[in-house]
Length: 124
Image (tube, rainbow, N blue to C red; front, side, top):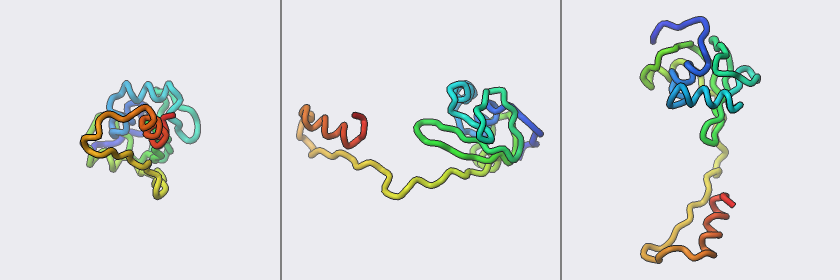
C-alpha cells in the first residue's frame, strides 16, 4: 500500500481509488451536486481524511464509501479497493427489469411493440 496522507483533495481521491474514470469526471460530479462528504455537498477541492463518509451518485447508482486511506496517485484496482470501505446497500432482490425478447427473424418491431418495450424498460 502506498504511504497515506493526512488529507487530500476529494476529486483526486475519487479518481485515485477508481470510483471515477478521470479526475475531470470526479470534479464534474462534485460541481453537479452528486458527491457528499459527511452528508454535506462537496466541491472538488474539499479535503477528505480517513474516517470520512463519501456518497457518490454515478451512472444511476449511489455508492456509499468510508475513506480508510488517503492517496493522490492512481493505483491498481486491488490496492485501490483497500483504500475505502464500501457501505453501499445491496440492491433489493428482483430489482432487475424484465428483458424484452423477440423471436429471431421477426423483423423490426411495430410501433405498438416499441411502445410495449419502452414501457418495460421504463423509458416512457
